[in-house]
Each structure stands twice: as structure tokens, then as C-alpha cells.
Image (tube, rainbow, N blue to C red; front, side, top):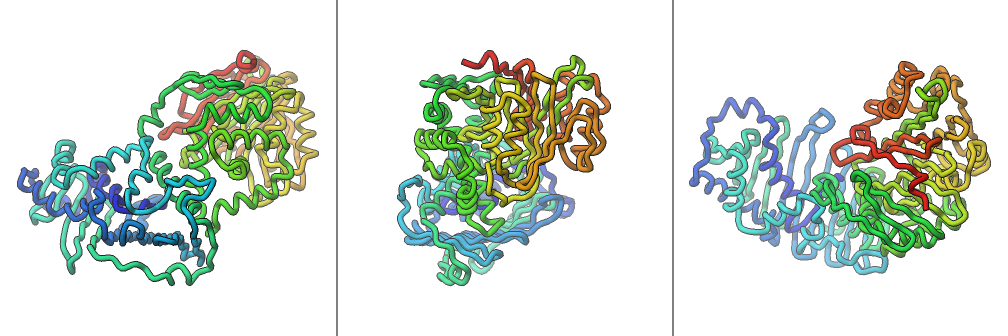
Length: 624
């Protein structure tokens, strides 16, 4: 998340303070080491540090009602120095200006008592929000008024909340006393420079009645300038560009919830990294935990399944929504210059005619249960339009026992925290084939699944985003799971259905030890048989289907070829390990459809799925 919280307890300021305190593992620049003489700070020198830090602390702690805080930084990103500038000006309890610029993006947010404007100078566009902040369908408490903003931008699911609370109490002196008990504070020889934790250099000065703090940590440097006066930007700042009108509640909710979710993703607390595992039963549904993984069993009509889904996973569904709609949506808006929710709504308008009515009923029942707009939930469920993944199926002579092993690697956006909503579903819709769906709370489609008739499916995204006049990929996958009993039926479904974008798939049938690779676009479907050579995939491998791209495809082919005839469950899991799986590896699944068994690994906040333990599930035992 590149957007920065704004307000009296500026999360940007907090982040700067925390960088001073907690970056003790980095290295101080050699020049600073050579040119200064440091002594361990005594009580008197810590008092001088507190005095110099006090003006900034007044801002970070929320005690300063008016200020202008500017940051000019050069930081190492993607192994190269990049410059970032930011300015935050709080004018009163209702108004602020926020401007951030980077060589590749720029965003400005201006809030006044009656208007909120988001300006994207590089796209020559501004989004103008007017009207009530308490519109139906929006959370009235999710707004950007500076007064008390820290409580709205931080949650107990992020460690940042503890530091926000710490800054809101006491003064700079008490904070320095606490910090000195955790890391070493050294005063340098000029009485205005300090070294914290042996690595972070801090220097203070006053220039033209402005307080200035210079930070250095290795090749990263920043200058923070604080002025007590503010000058509100003129309205022309947002009227000189193309203007797009929006409900004010929509702009403010997206940013406030998006920022709050971003803190949870970037700095999760034990609420997310070590959550309480409390099983639960409701009518038509049950929540279980299997070796720490979330398992949900659902059965009944589409309406009943949607309600049970919402009752069991309300909090997890909300986190999934915030990750996609608000955190990712804000970043996507800044990158593209288009309002993300508009893009999503436009795509859904073209996709909706191809979605089965019972799927819509289930999604709307889920939305009503968790208190969300039905239209918004329907739109969010067509979100996964670009996945970059790998997949394979090996069987007969390729495996130790001749069984079919179908591996599916989902490489997709661990950076937006979808792993917090990871859920394995076992779904039994009345009069349809029961199936396992490895997915996410709030998501009713499928990207990885296996049904009770030993059919398994996994997909890989290609190109062609925007070609949405067909059945959404996740809907087509879901239909195959609940409608198809043979591989030929799956192939027929893809051949006769209008399709979207470019996708690749591996389909398998454990009853017959058959598998096929698929390349599908709106114009055509190609089926790649086991052992068949293809210019995109290379020379055919006997009794194997291998799908990936680039170096990951080369590595996967090599592994399958080198271990042909020796592949079992453990070896099949190894086939999906890094670097076949990317660093963004969200989940891995190994299906053994002939046995009705599958294995799931989900990413954590600091490990891709390929480095996480697999959990075994037996679909036959889990069915009603």
C-alpha cells in the first residue's frame, strides 16, 4: 500500500519514529561512522534529545492541532535509490492537505468540511467527493477527518496500534526513556546529532523558524521538516484536471479501510499470525480447524449455503473485501488513473449475463449475512482475472504407483493479505455434485478444486484483460466442479461456453487416469494431450501434462523428467517448491482424485505457500 495515513496522529510520522527505534539491524553509512565520535547518552543528554524531538512528538502524538510536515527521502527500492517527497498539512479538525510524489506516481488528497478531492497529476485526473459521509452501504465511521483518525486507521490486528497508543500517552522524554531501555542511544560530538541502535543517524536543526530532523540509515536518508503554520491549498489544485464525481463516503471509506488493512498486512499482530482457532456450527454449515488451516463445510440450497458462509466467516470475509476493494483498489487507482470500483462494475456488467442464477443467489445471501451490498459482492467475485501460476498432472508410468497426481500452484498477490482469509470449503449444493474448493472467505467462485467424482481442476492466467463478454473464469471452474463427472464433460463445458480473456488449465480425472492441458481464449480452446509437444510448453513428456511459463516451466519440466517414474505424494509436493512457485505463492494444492484426497498449503505473512506445511483432507470423509 503506497497511500499514507493523514491526520493529527499521522501514521506516516509514526512510521518515521518507528524507523528510528526499530531499524537496529541495518548498517550506518561508513562516512558517518568515520567522522563522528559517540558516547553513550546519559540522563542529561537523553533530556537534550527529548527536547529536540518534542516538536515532532507533538505532531505524532496528536497534540499539535495545526502543522505542516514535509518529508524528502531517498530510499533503496528494488536495489536502486528512489526519491520520495511528501507533505502533510493539518488545518483544523476537518481539513488537511496531503501530497506525495515519486518518479513513477503522484497522489494528492485535499479534505475540507464539505469536500474530499483525490488528485492524480500524472493522469491529469481528479476524483471529487461530495455529499453525506453516512450513505447507505458505507461504514459511517470510516472517514478521514483528522480528529481522532488514529483509532480509525489502526486496528488490533496490526502491531502499529500498540505504538500509536504509546505515542498518545506521556511526552517525548518518557518515550526516549522507554527507547533507551530497548536500544543504545549515543550522542555524537556536536550535541545535535545522535545514533540509535548503532545504525540510525539523527540530526536536528532549526532553519527559518522551522524544525528539521535528518535521518540516515545506510543508503537511506530522509529530511523531515516541521512548521507550525499551514496554508490550505487553493481549490484550483483539484479543478485544473479532468474531474470525476464520486460519493464522498466512497472515497473516504476506500482510503480509511484500505490504509487500516494495509497496516494489518505490513505489520500483523498475533490476532492474524496466531489467531484463535474456535470451531463453530450453524444451520447448513460448520467451521473446523485442521492443523491450523480453516475448513468450512456447507450444504443445502444456494441461499442456505450463502447464509451459512456469511455466518461462519463474517470477519474473514470483511478482511478479504478490504484487501481487494480498498487496499488493492486504492493502489490500482493511483497506478491506472481510473477509479477501481468503476472498472470492477464495468467488467461485472458484461460478465453478469453469463453467471448462473443460483450462483448469484448464493452470493447475495452471503452479502446480506455479512452486511454488504449485494452488487458489491457480486462484482468482487469476478476479481481474479489475472493469475500467474503453474500446474501439472502425472500418472501411469510417471508415478511410483501409477496413480494420477495433479499439482496446482497459485502465484498471486500475497502482498494484499488474502492469506488471512484462506479457507478450504467442502460444498454440497442440493442436486449438484459435492466438491472441495480451495479458496478465500467471501469468494464463491473457484480457482482450485476437486469434486466427489474425482474431477480436479486448476487454472493459470494469461493475457487479454478486458475481454469480459463471457463466463467468468472462476464461475466456469465452479460449474465444472458441481456439474461434470467426466473429463469429456469438462472439455465440452469449456468448448461450448463463451469465455473471457486468456487462461490456461490442467483438468484431470482420477477415475480414468486422464489429464489434459488447456489453452483457452474467447476465440478458441486448445487441448494439449499428455506427451504432446507444444511450442509454448516444449517437447512432450510421457504420461504427463506440464503447464507454466518462463524459467518456472523449464524447472518444472526438468524435475518431472529427472524423476519420471519415481513421483509419489512427497515428490509431487516437491515439484511445486521454489522456484517453480514464485515468491507470491498464495496456495499450493496436490490432488489425488482417485483416492478422493487432496493436500493444501497456504502462505503466511512471511512465507510463501511452498515453504509452508501441507494439510491432508479426505473429501469422502468430509461429505455429509
